[in-house]
Structures are given as structure tokens and as C-alpha cells.
Length: 135
Image (cartoon, rainbow, N blue to C red):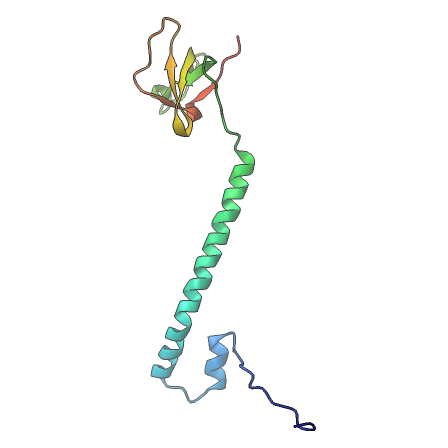
């Protein structure tokens, strides 16, 4: 086999199904359906990968703009008054109530709050509805 080159079989893929149907003019409807079914798993995989990539891009853009609010125990904070939210604030009414004292830091951004008299609020509050109080 010195002078003879070995010929390797080459696998050829056609990227578009429309091109396959144009090249193979004598395909029946059943054969077209079978070709579609063969490519269905690949299309689903490609769509899943594109969806995951899109979610990663959206998450990275969101994470760039969000600044986490972290409060320490003993810090003074204001609490967003959620009861006024549907109507919005009136002209000279504040939408923040307080100040409150952070008595305990819980998991996942929740905080237990007490007022100046030492009375605890009934439920812990999410850090999204709190902001620092500057006296």
C-alpha cells in the first residue's frame, strides 16, 4: 500500500431539511415525516441550549444592576409601608415608616425588627422593603 492512498469514508451532513427535500426530489410524505422526526431531538437540544444561554445572559444583566441590601443587627432602618402601595403616596405623606432596630438577621434576606420601645413586629420582613435610616 505504498503508492495507494487509503480512502476514508466521509460523513456528510446537510444542515437544512429544506435542502434535503430539494436534493431528494423523490421523497414521499412519510419519508419527510421520518426525516423530521430524526432531527426533532437535535432541534429540542438546540432550543434548550439556547434557552439556557438566554437565561444566563438575563441573569448576568440583572445581577449587574441589583445591589443587595445587607443590614446588621442593631442598625436603624426604615420599613416600606406596603398598605399604601395600591394608591401610592400622597403629596406629603411618607411611604416609609419607622425607624426600627434590626434585632435578628435571618436567612435569605429576612430580618426581625423591633421598635424603640422594644416591641417586636409580628412577622419578619424582607430586606427588599427596608432601607437604612440616617439620623
